Length: 191
Length: 385
Figure 1 (cartoon, rainbow over the protein chains, first blue to last red):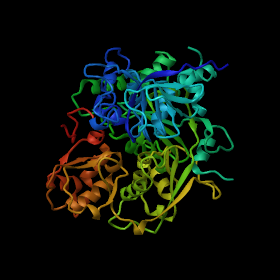
Figure 2: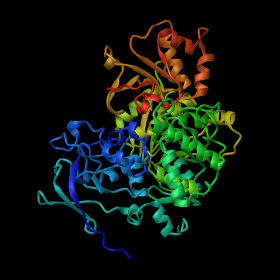
Figure 3: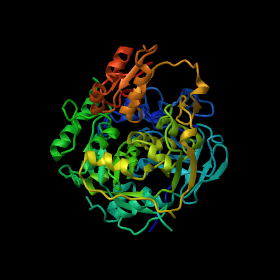
Figure 4: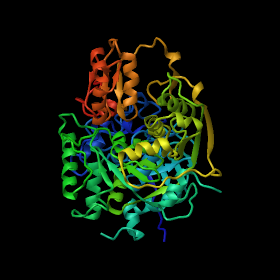
């Protein structure tokens, strides 16, 4: 019943600890429509724009997620220290990262509303690492997340780290969100 | 083995005799609250998933309180309020507190209790992290995102992972006159850190809880999220009941923690030995005592928000400001229109609180979230670089 899940590959964007939702998407930008195809791109443009410049794109800093004038990022995987996504409940936070092109995050711990929003909205996959990898991985490193063997490979540095299985939220993640999950289980009628 | 207050509420609402921390359960929702920032995207998801003509599961259980970006010229922000207005009309919602009308309230977390929507034993979700405030009334209340809110709008249910409970036990009979609930919660957050309660319940209890008014208790539970907590909760007592019964005649069932309930940890604080606390920039757990910061220069003062804009907060400020002039920009933002009206009638030495603030040279804003979360550049009290 479980089909093989493909690896997630891409360049790393590295951040420190306690990255709050106002750093992920500052409150002044919460007004744009997520439905309008053009307007929603603004969320990609401003994703992570609240992170202090010297803490954005570690270890060197002063790297922005999306380049000036762009709405999509060259980076695909965020690696961060503890308590990622703390602060407000704004779902615009995981949404803006998805719009910018982020597919997964790897951190030792999340703030729970951000984690829940990522899973239930199907925006990106929030993986948990056993150790803080934000000091090991460098922004721009080529990474590969193996979802079958639960590892994060750093292809640039030729290193491999174990990550935690998704656990009780795996079914919702693999369904693609809470609505898809509820339809599969019959809670919500098929549309 | 007994259950905690939070475990019992989640068991009651999921049709189970008992639940344990770590269980995933689907709970029936008593109240869903949303506002102008997260309401429009939640409505959009609801219509996409359930159909353009879908009806919400129970119009008497959906409460919409615009409060975030209200007094602004920002066209996108105003469009959001328009979307709420159209949805409330279309769905015939009885509990929509529209901007520019007599029913406008202001900050949702203070408005919910004023309007009688916070009741012991119930389950309340809101699209705002500070929804945990309502736990002060002995209920389960927590913040969720737009997708989860849309799911509730269509089904009346949501899945919840049952949290472990951390117990904060207050000793002492009374609050010293120099101490407020904010000092207590800043001390606790400073002790356990901004992720010290992640995924967990913070239950505030002990004999000292009797010394705390409903506003004090709301300040404690409001900031549970600042320690990463899923919810904050206080067992209901005669203080809770007096407040709730003065606001609603809706029936409710009080729930208490069992004496043999299992807790993640216990933390003891003696109210009579605590001191005024400050959270320094830029984190709620960056604690210092007020004494340690004596002589520190401040840039500006802001008295407002869901945690600091209640009547008791303004009374405390007015007691200091009466007969004085402010020496730095000081912004006053009552959380709700009801509190704004009370500032005109509550007095100290015969002088209304609002007059004390005006005489002192404070800048007075309208009830709303205002600068607490930033918002558009023309937001009252916002610092623009």
